[in-house]
Amino acid sequence: MKNRTVGAGATVAIVLAVGLTSAVEAQRGAAPQRGAAPARPPAPQAAAGYNGPRTPDRKPDLNGIWQAVTTAHWNLEAHSASEGVPAGMSVVDGGAIPYQPAALAQRNENFKNRMTADPLRKCYLPGVPRATYLPFPFEITQTPGHIGIAYEFAHGFRTIFMDATPHLEDLDFWMGDARGRWEGDTLVIDTVSLGDKTWFDQAGNFHSDALKVVERFTPTDATHINYEATMDDAKVFTRPWKINLILYRRMEKNLELLDYECAEHVYEKLFKQSAGKP
Amino acid sequence: MMFRFFGLLSLALLVPAVAAAQQGGAAPPAGRGAAPAAPANYPPYTTPVSSYVPPRTPDGQPDISGLYVAIPLPRSVETPVAPMANRPANRANGEFSYSLNERPKLPEGAIVRPAGVDPPDGKIPLKPEALAKRKEIIANQEKVEHLDGRVLCLSPGVPRSTIPAPVVGYQIFQKPGYVVIFYEQSHLYRTIPLDGRPALDPAIRKAMGVSRGHWEGNSLVVEVTNFTNNLENNWVIGAVSATPGIPAESLTTGHGIPHSDQYRVTERYTPIDANTIHYEAKITDEKVFTQPWTVAWYAFAKAPKDYVPVEYACFEGNEKNLFLMTNTDISGIRVNVP
Image (cartoon, rainbow over all chains, first blue to last red; front, side):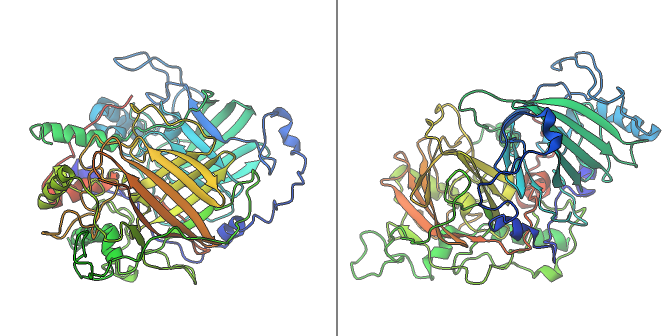
């Protein structure tokens, strides 16, 4: 265990980058580019496939609570059922993750040790893209300059900067450093600085600190998003690879995110161990 | 090693005692029932009246969205122990969990004013059992079962998550029917529906409570209920430590103030001008307090232009802190996840 914590970046260090652009301010101030004017430009041409609701700035309206229905969280690749784990088909394009040989050996070792080695079992933040397909809902809050994604698991969140704020340098984050843009009706998010501490699933699929993730959220109607994430990590994989899954809008009336305060459960165990006190 | 030591020091100062700040001096509080001549410790508290009219969001809410930083309370104990320039680069650092981001400079003109409190004697109206409980917590504050929940990296609840600490930025989002607040501290968030929906079943508990909001003029009023109380450590008001011997009813520190399943808060967020939000929290818990009580301060200042909120992952690196501070080893604990 010691290795893991003494090693790199269990933490996220944070230094304010100096001299960033004033893009944040630009968007925050009355968002002049979209203005208070009620005039609504026509939807972009690429929108042909999407006929769901739109925000005042004519982007697909992704506000709301979403959830993946998939076994990707247990294993991205095809797998039979095992105790507590439903069987599932691969969500990886082409079926298998293109590991380099040494990395494949590491993944197999991870798999053997998964009951203790999966960082999620220590209540660490899940990272990207794993946060998306945990068996917990997440909520999107969409504004022109920033998109907030709040995850029920361990109250993780990401702020996606849509306003040309540059990536921060030399820092690792459990949930990465995310910058987004719209390509037609597809929300594209580039995430870097993910460190090397998170896994992609419970089966030990992993990455290095060189990982870059590009996610594409393409809504197909008001209640479905086609979700793709491309993983690029030259230290671990032989080529970039992609997963595909569907995100479903949770439609229950008055649904809201609840808590999975994972750290509380660690302390519940701790206090139980310490002779029932308190 | 120096690094570790630094981590500990910082930790000790991480959470300002709400009212060490508010107290405005070392004079002992003039308590309820004290000699009438004794001056009150706090100015009489009244909700501020603001003539500022914020712009509207596309769906017609008063627009308070944006990035904010915490306004420090005057006389607070949160002075950084080392200037930023002297801090080692902390990429790839697993030694401790906190990001130790220096508070960004406040924008010019930010209001730093004394907080208000009601009752004005600054004594928390604790019931006798709650007073005894708090005495016990303060007297045994080094024990892990009484450690401040923030040292354990538990979610700090409300209003604590709005009490200034060295690393506090906020992001307020507004979308139709909702206000959403992201707290930089420990990546906490709250989604506040504005549609008048009922509170959740009391069987459902959340560390940050369940929020129901509405606008009263330009003030956002939020009723927060359904707080977690499964661990003794998750204090909804709090501080990392308390001076030994401090009176258990004192608000000079938030340390160890208990709460029950009845605990609830009424918050008011009032924009005072384009850059400042005044915050008020009225605290009610019939099982713990003899009467509701209120704390309030100018809490949010629009962040400087170059401010970029960043991740503050508390629990992920906290193992070592806990071990160093309390000899508590959580490194072997695993929890079941679905």
